[in-house]
Length: 355
Ligand SMILES: [Zn+2]
Image (cartoon, rainbow, N blue to C red; front, top):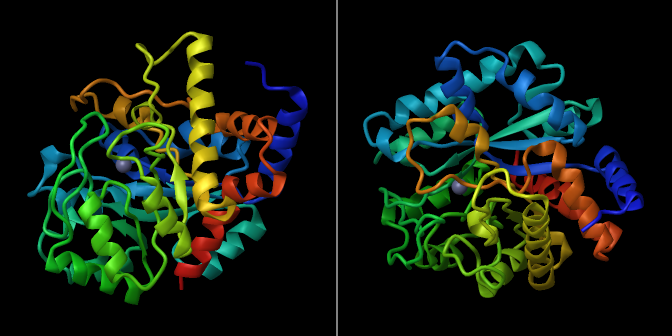
C-alpha cells in the first residue's frame, strides 16, 4: 500500500492549518515514572518534536493509576502525576502548557502553543470521597471517566482489551452523584472503559454531551472495549465525540512483534482507517476524532508491569498521524470531514464543556 505524495502533502497542510487533537495519551503517568529515575525534560525531548511535526494543538493527558497501586497509593500517584507533568513542561511553557479554561485554550491556539488538558482515567484516586473531585478540578483536571477496566466506588468497567467477556454492573449511587457534580463543575464525562450497563446508566442520567476518548467500533472488531453502533449513535446524537484508538487490541490487528514487517504495519493502518470510516458512517463526520492511546512510552517507562502481552501501537509516534490522515484522504474521505476528525470536532466539544 503506497500513500501517494499528493495526499501526504494535503494531510501535512491540514495538520499545519487546522486544529489537531489527540484526545487520549498516558503522558502524565510516563513523565512521573521517568522523573522518579531522575530524568528531566521528558516531554521536551521525547515528545515535543513529534507533537510539533504533527501540528498538534491539544493533547489530553490521562491521570492513570495501575491496579497494583490501588487503593492505598491512588491519591498519591494521581497528585504525583499532575505535579510531575506540570514541572516537566515548565521550562518549555512557551511551547506547551497545562491548560484548564476555554479562554486559555483559545489563547494557546492563537499563539501556536500546545495545550495539555488533564483527564482522570477512572476516579479511583478519590476513594469513596467525592468531595475530592473539586480538589482535582482545582488542580486543572477537566475530564474524567468514572472507572478504568475495573470496578470501583463509582462504576463497573468493561473488561480489558485483551479479554473477551461482558462484565455486568453499572453506576453506583456515588457514581451517579459524580456525574451530576462533573456536569456542574464543567468537566467532560468519558465513557471509554465503562461497562455496557454503565453506558445505559449514563444515557439515563446525563444532560451534557459525553464522549468516548479512545474506543473503536465493535462492528469492525468485536471487543468489549469498542462501541456497538447503538452506543456510537447515542454519543453522536447527544453532541459527543468518539476518539479513534490506535491500540492493536482494539483495532483487531496485533502483529507478533512490536516491529512488524511493512506489510503487516500497512494492514494495521488500513484497519485503523476502517474503524474511522465505520464510526463516521454511524456517528456522522462531526462526531469522530483522534484518541490514539499510544502506549509504548508508558510501557517502556514501567518495565515492572506485566501486561498480558505487549501492546502494538499502529502509529509509532505522533509524527505518524499525518500518514493516517493522508490515507483517509486517499480512500476518499471528504476534506472537511477529515479536518473535523483531525481535531475540529474535539476542539468544538472541549470549547462547549470548558468554562
Ligand atoms: Zn484506556
